[in-house]
Length: 402
Ligand code: SF4
Image 1 (spheres, rainbow, N blue to C red):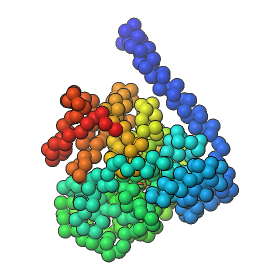
Image 2: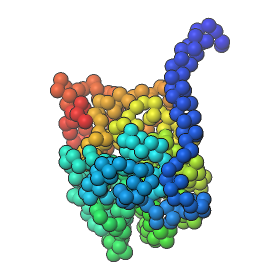
Image 3: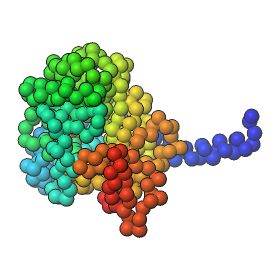
Image 4: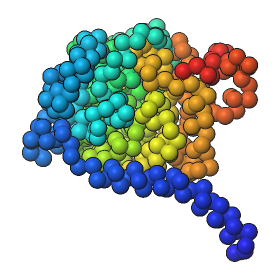
């Protein structure tokens, strides 16, 4: 029944919503008005070429010289790039590079794809998840009872500067051999308890349609496999790869779940939206696994907007990963305490559909631990807290440390 109290409460809720709405409208207006892409102008290609994923891969930007030509960068910046890329190579699709609005280290796209001098900081571990110690056969990683990861390549359309698997990126692209694929498939066949396979890499969608189909046929021929998942950043960095032909292949091996990694609302473009809607409307179930990255998405409004925009293109926000302790990525780290504070602000301010689970991947491959504000009640005076893995293993974390 309409009454004074309800109207008063409604006014309070409107007041609560207004600051975010102002942010959202301002952000979207600026995004829509951004027209001048130096990258697009530099390449001077037809729409046909630009929208062709093979053209995009053939024209990946991989050298400081090329970036200098496009963005007119200084000698200093160029020397830095060369220094970092000698240790960690880089490659960026023209499309993803074209999303940079300002060629400066406060641009969220720049931060994710342009090598930065901070990467030479040696703090962190090469393989904190112990993936190399959880590899029972072929290119399988096994950390859980009923599911495995099948790594099929180290190649990616764009190498993310925060990548947790940067140790695998190496100096050249490697694709799984037929022999290695057979060994991996044999292992899965011999373990009927495995019902779910995550195909990942690198990025599996850099493989040809026929090779993707080859892998899918082999997996679907295993009677005990119920679910096939694909972990990919292609819809974000090379949405042109989501072609009718690829979707035709994927549809044949349903149910296929695809988890992607949108980290910022600037990545939701007409191209990436079209790719995701095409996938979803053809029965591929989409989820997003964002990573908290300092100065990219560690403010609550950006996070809320990203998750709301994902739902509009039929992607369910699934996980937010706490940054892992990977060597060369320390500059992206935040503390668990900060992460929880940002994350918890979503609660109530937006619907549950737009709230993923915040996850800490326990070191040594011990599995995922959900993080939320309850943890803050059990923190010791020195910032440590005991967390429990799904198997009951206790791990100690300092929630104040980045
Ligand atoms: S797409 Fe994934 S595997 Fe490739 S560089 Fe980015 S995070 Fe790493």
